[in-house]
Image (cartoon, rainbow, N blue to C red; front, side, top):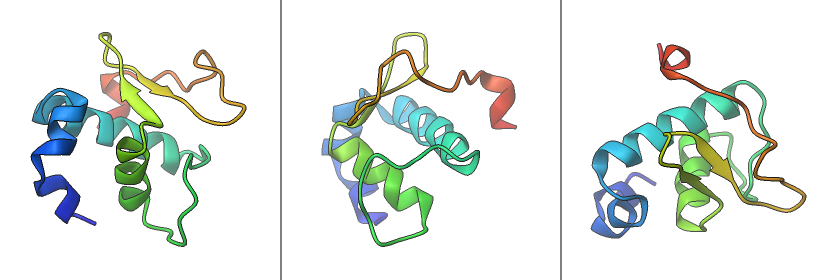
Length: 88
């Protein structure tokens, strides 16, 4: 699972290590608050879910550092609003 984080492909896909870290943190907060995963995995490990969502282009970080979800029945505007205070 963490092997994917060592690959430059995932870093380049998101646009850099800082953006990758931000996207992972914000999406983990969403999942911990009850958001539904956008990928089917037989795991309860939210980190694995987030990595797969990124690799499968299900989530991305906007220029405003907001997480956008792309999935079945998921409207891009139907998101949890997170700000930096949610990460502490």
